[in-house]
View 1 (cartoon, one colour):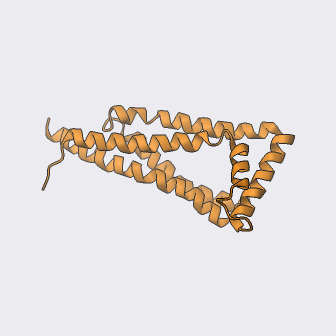
View 2 (view 1 turned 120 degrees about the horizontal axis):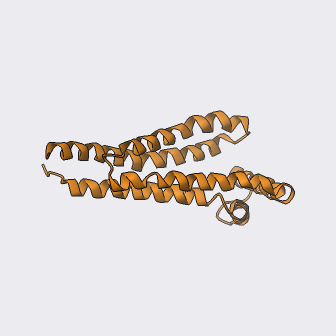
View 3 (view 1 turned 90 degrees about the vertical axis):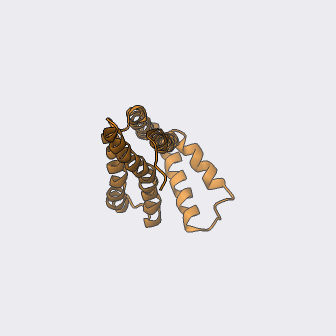
Length: 166
């Protein structure tokens, strides 16, 4: 059986955290140009017209466009959403530098990823979000959880190796 070194584990942890952090920032930054993105999706030939998904995107685009025309300050909320993603991503600088010492940040991220599910399934129906879209929202929690779990598992291994070698 091949023995894994501390350096190899550190690389795996860093890669997982970089992937997670990049996805977190990208998903957040997409909240800034929301109306423009929705207009592209609504006009896109990639989404077949006369489908449930296309109808939902068109309805959402119309709502955002009308809100921005009449009440542009409402989009300030999505600006703060984007900002929050960026701020949360900065917390992962600690585990990138020292994953064992900052494992709590990885655990926090895993808990936050899991919390996406109850939020989607509780608030989704209240806000009249279609079930299939709630599942899409849940995918963000799932796709966040995967690299974080890998980082967590490798950090625990790293912790064992670090203390074993001391």
